[in-house]
Length: 474
Image (cartoon, rainbow, N blue to C red; front, side, top):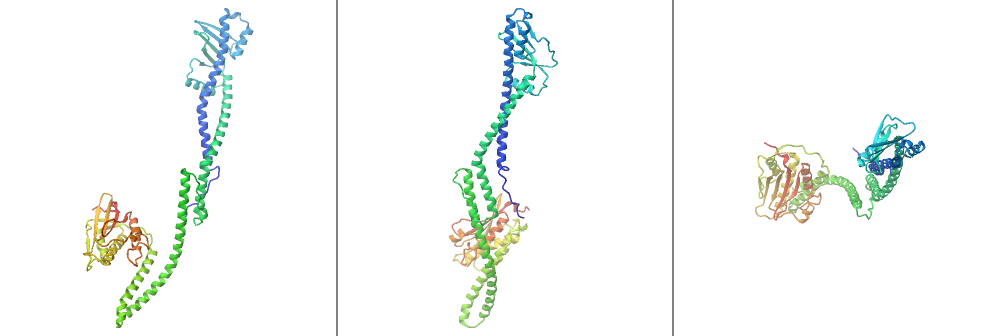
């Protein structure tokens, strides 16, 4: 099923809008944290200003022996300057009161004691004023100009609340302006350093995915030395490798289709030639009898090569069908098909335990063992080795089960080791295709295992490493 195509988000619908929103939210959060102490300080200063007027009034009261003798005009002026309905001055256990000509009897009085100036008390008091009803009466208590004096003011809380709301509006406007300016500045900086390069990478990946055969879409990395620069260079290298690989695969696919057609016709022609060679081999001519076996052998090799190419082309990726299989019997069957059982010169030693039962695909894993045993036989037949032998051993541990197929032949040449599991390149003998080991590795990996060539001074040993989880417990 084709994956859904991704679409590059708009300039203000991807990382950009998220970045701006995050910056503004963080700045406003900081402003809120700073706003509460600032508002508490504003309220404290406002109350202190009223107390200072009250202290001036207290000095007047302290200088006049008879408060009742003060002119009403003077007392009203003192109260008006303080914005208070009444001022109480207490000293040495005595109290003196100045109040309006028409006293106000408040229903709800809240006390603001300015002698308690800790930050938490001031913040709670400021919050209380903002969310309280606007008709409360405020009782401000503070220290007078003398150590044993106390000044109290009674006034409406409405002016304080209105001034605090106006101050909050100013703080809000300033905070929004700071947040906006900071967000724009940080956004421009982040856009230049991060967002634009990331959008460029994203746009390039989307375009290259739609047309990976277009070499002009390979990204040109910038000279940056940071993480984004590394990503750009690695992406350019990956796209270049992918472009080359896809072009090679396309050429190989086209070539493979042509080779398959030619190979099919060639195999039919070789089969006809083989039939004719078999008839020629029955002639009594001595020259024919001497050359016919070579002709038959050559034709057999050509037909085998053509058949192996066709088999590899038809190879499917069907998953293995797991079932309990006795490995000793599977090795014996593979050795028989590899013509090692009863071989006139090569000795076969199967040391696979009879109790070893694995949950594998017998047909696929048998094909791997057949290929390894057949390669060992052909290597020993082509070499002059004293007492040629092939052995199959098993090593088990907590995580893996290793089946080793080894021979005491001359070993693999360097060219074969360099391209061991590469189709058409990893053959160790002349005329080989190298398809057997390539297919054997794919089958082993489909079982969750690995096929490795062991490094040893003499002979050749392949290790077929399978997960221990495939073991069937008796």
